[in-house]
Image 1 (cartoon, rainbow, N blue to C red):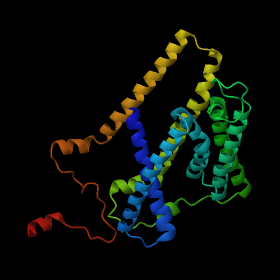
Image 2: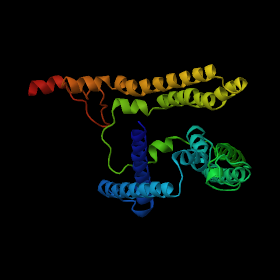
Image 3: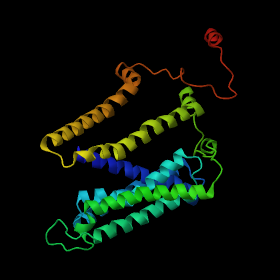
Image 4: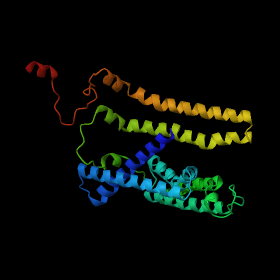
Length: 303
């Protein structure tokens, strides 16, 4: 499971980085008239480069003695500051580009400073032989990395909010996202389902769902649930067994949803494949603007 988790994450990162370079750098600044073949070729180069970089980075971290736990916790210090600005850009129509970029970079700088300051003031490093100060032991200390992660998230959120309020911009017109993004090639006719999923009503419902379950669930897991455990103090053996049981139940429930939900959502397609039954696309295909409706009865008679 660990191997599959790491390889799938690495694959997704390689695709994401190559896509960002292909569309946001190459097509935006280097070759605005790039064709599909050009973008595909540059994307392949991006995958090769990033995978080689990943291998070199893993070898370098292993060579200097940084374990997976050290790197895993340190990720929050480096990239945690991007989470609030991205969320605010997507969910707040007044968030500005200046506020988002300032929050991301300011939060990261403050996180690194906090992380190093806390690490430098750890008086009794847990590993024997290491002295106080900034070293692999103290910088990998959970308190130092926790301080950096918390600063990364909270400072970036505060900066993003304050700067947006100072600038006080007009609400962003979300229709620009639909009309202002040009595709590489002419898209195929849009289906009824596509039009429904991109309608204002559908997107409003999706936003409400995200705010209710996504934001609400995050607040419960990150803030409310840990606060509820504070009165318990140091766990007894029986209480720790209960805690472990809850964690296992949570893991099994998550695994069940992750495996079963995609099957349930695509049950029609699965049945069509297993029974060799063609999928009726005409039922979901919307007529294009300007097309003349065809009289199927007359057409069949002529045939």
